[in-house]
Amino acid sequence: MPILAAAAPDEASGIVTNVVDGDTFDLRIDKTDPRIIYEIERVRLADVDSPEMSTPDGPPAKVFATDILLGKKVWLDIDDKSRDGRDPYGRLIAVVYLEDRDGTINTTHPFNRLLVDAGHAVVKDFTNNEFDPATWWEEGIPQPELSPVPEISTTTAKSGQFVGSLESDKYHYPSCRWAKKILPQNEIWFSSSQDARAAGYVPCGVCKPP
Ligand SMILES: [Ca+2]
Ligand SMILES: [Ca+2]
Ligand SMILES: [Zn+2]
Image (cartoon, rainbow, N blue to C red; front, side, top):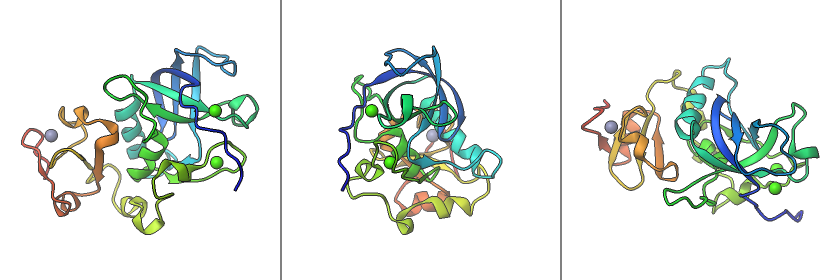
């Protein structure tokens, strides 16, 4: 096993000003780092890959990332192994952390993981960076048969995607005001209402999903 640098989720922070696609966004820097040179930096999530925007699964991944990230404060663990922490396109390579409601950094569910859990990205472990995606899950990287990715890819773009909370039994359209109150780490996504109901969830009375 290679020796990996300890996770450092607080190397930099900022407010997300623009979401490019599922795995790329722009950040207005708040807490800076010697590797940061711009007021607004483009960030590429480390070791995950979202569908390109030109494919059917691209836009839903962007919607997911936008719902969670846009306008929010996030923290970065910037790659210590890449030159200046950047990829060949000049984007900062990072594991991205959200804040809990009390303002502490949620270190257990980085956004990189949330994106994979929601089926909007696959793990692609580049070995030339400091990160090991297996550490994002208690049981290691989810195996393909457990991954929702193949399921999502069989649905058409934007259809049949609902969100619930691990702390309630309701499921919602992502646009529902109650859905927006669900903490990212509590979100559970369903590719269809059948899936939601099979998991024991019932439709929200406000947004009334099918
Ligand atoms: Ca780092
Ligand atoms: Ca890696
Ligand atoms: Zn709702």
